[in-house]
Figure: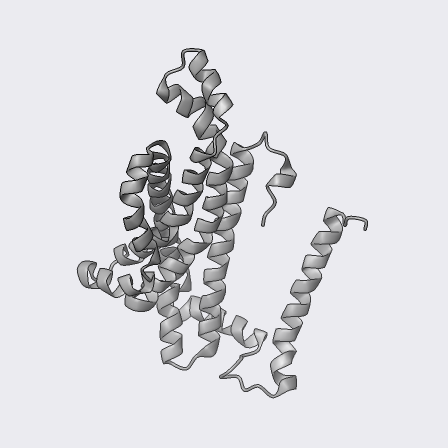
Length: 260
């Protein structure tokens, strides 16, 4: 089967978007779905315009985006540091892995109210929930990559009188980069989920707060606008990670670094 060209793939994506928009606009009316259940696309767009004027939508988008970036960066850094530490020290992994696994298994939603009780209605509970969610996929990817380094490359550096830090710098860390970015891709989307959970539980600003406010007011269009904003932030975060990956891993064939 002949592969589609890039322009054909782009055209197909645009057609799918148009079809989705048309279905959203005319589908509810054709199926007799009331507006309070599923508002039409035009009504949702109108609500978004109104929210820019009355709900300070830009400010709430900025708050959520800032929390997502902070949670993503802190969680990713922790994941890299702990992943490398455990990968280089099997004894440390054996000692800490049960506690890390328990933290990962524990439902993050359950921590959100606790963080709000400790830190109040600030940005910190939302960021902390995002950190907990982001940390594990980055850590496990880095740990697996460090453990799967080619031993022949390690022995080569050692044969050339390379020190331990040189083995890490020239062999282990470069070998882990692809796995690291795979974890960062996942983490960029999970950060949005973590922040949203925090804002739903204890937020007075942000898109998660607007989502809860719209639900309380019975304003389904506001809920859809909030969901669309959260989705857009996630897409931008994911795309930023992909662009950074292409810059850093420019030597890797492009086919190995698709958007998904």
